[in-house]
Length: 75
Image 1 (tube, rainbow, N blue to C red):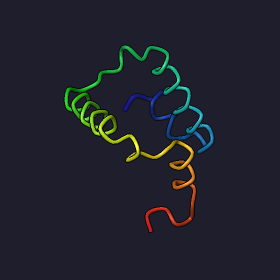
Image 2 (image 1 turned 180 degrees about the horizontal axis):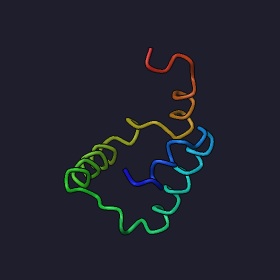
Image 3 (image 1 turned 135 degrees about the vertical axis):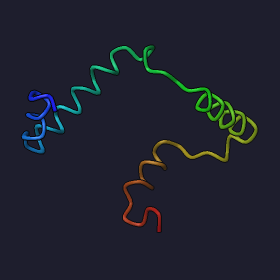
Image 4 (image 1 turned 45 degrees about the vertical axis):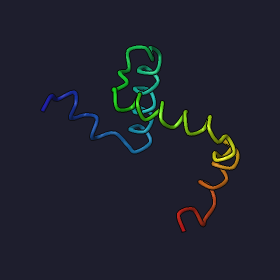
């Protein structure tokens, strides 16, 4: 393994998390270069069509956040 890459495994958890965040931020700087696969486009189109047919079927971002944060999520 590359010695510089090996050093990554020696970082503290906090440093590793910061590295991941920094890497993700650098990728997100150019979103047009992130490939979107055909099956992903099809799934998005399907979900958008379903939402447009029945907008009440979705949940607001606030409701979704609360559901994720609740202790009973998935129960």
